Image (cartoon, rainbow, N blue to C red; front, side, top):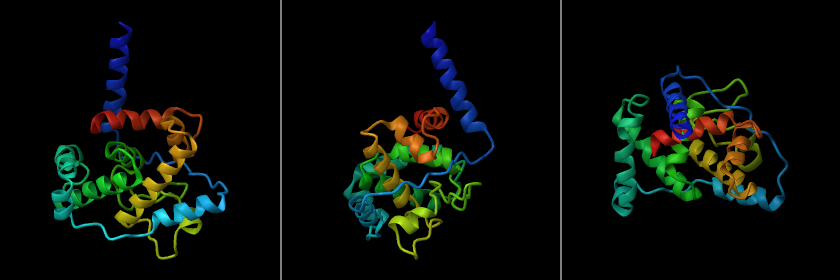
Length: 200
């Protein structure tokens, strides 16, 4: 009985999340002083590299193509253009793999944070798909980094989430709380977990 009620509650939360009008769930990622070594490591992680073209990525890593194919219909309502959708999904897979994160998790964060809106801006000033706060560019980036650029935004978002996971020793609830600037409040992690169930 309890198990059924829990499943019903999860379904209702997921239904509300997927059918709600697009609102930004971003909090304000909080500036925290970083040790020089940590700042240097994060800065190195955010620097651009030359990712292989999508065709090469799909051929070299067949699992990326399988994952993208699985997510196509789930993301289509937000990104109806198939070229834009492919670019986002392959970039999510690439940046998630680079940061050592499950791509489903990154997709769930994007869903909750911006509903796949490239130019989303929260009231706190967070920007783009993964709602990255601009202070991160000053802290670990370079002035030419544009947080509305797909790959730049995902690079920062995945590096920051990985950083918080490391700080929290793998505790995803606390890492997500830090990412959203709402550590200790279960609301945001629960929204991400509900979205994650949809993208798994």
